[in-house]
Amino acid sequence: MPGSRDLDPSSSPRALLGAELRHAREKAGLSQEYVGQRLFVSGSFVGQLEAGTRRMQPQYARVLDEVLGTDDFFQRNCGAAAKSKHPEHFAEAAEAEATATEIRQYTPLLIPGLLQTPRYTRAVCRAYQPTAPNEAIEELVTARMERTRILDDPTKPLLWAVIDEAALRRVTGGREVMAEALHHVTDLARRSRVVVQVLPFDAGAHAAMEGAIKLMDFEEAPPLVYFEGVGTGRLEDDPATVKHQKLTYELLTACALSPQKSLALIEAMAQDYAHEEHP
Image 1: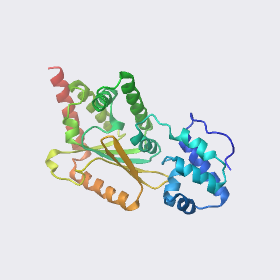
Image 2: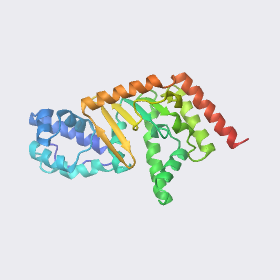
Image 3: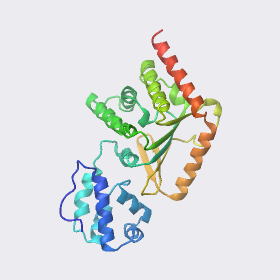
Image 4: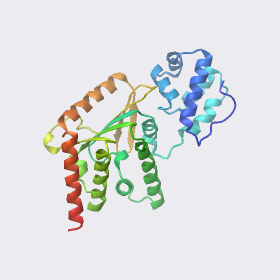
């Protein structure tokens, strides 16, 4: 039994809660598949809870306390693990992203969040919430910039982004902001920290015309795919769904410009934005 203490919210509550779940399950001599059956989820989902890549929901916490004999430990602590600085529909994906070893992403309409600059993010958030107080917008900007810190590690995670040409040509925040944003992307690529490909307009119809895709792989949990819409999002761990979206991503990379040609195009566009802003 994990004990009567509460988890410390300052030290990755979701990861700690997952570790306590694994400890309690193994101490009870139960498999992930058995616990999953009691929760009406898959064994791999239980593994994701233990790895901290999925959120502990109150209905799961109640059953876990019953099955594992942990009094009300998980019910008391799942609230702390659920707290997030990110919008509700994206919180689980953002926290999974922080533990991923590989991230592959296609974005049709904007620069991926992990590659954004503060001013670009501020323009996006303001467009999403035109009447929000400045303080609320700044909180969103800060949360997104905190996400980008995973790129401070020189090697992990692998980040491979396919960006639609439309995202590069949509002037978000003004031409000066776009020049800065594109220079930031090319700087990361030049430092071999990320792989970036541009899906050009002349590629025509492609496999992901219906929306964005984010694929995430982990060391100790099954892969996930995240689908995002306007104010909505969902994580999927169904193996068939993940497999299909990996194929979709491979088809996109085949249609996109090579990393070298993509880098040259983005740099040229950044220069164009800069010169147009300061003729």
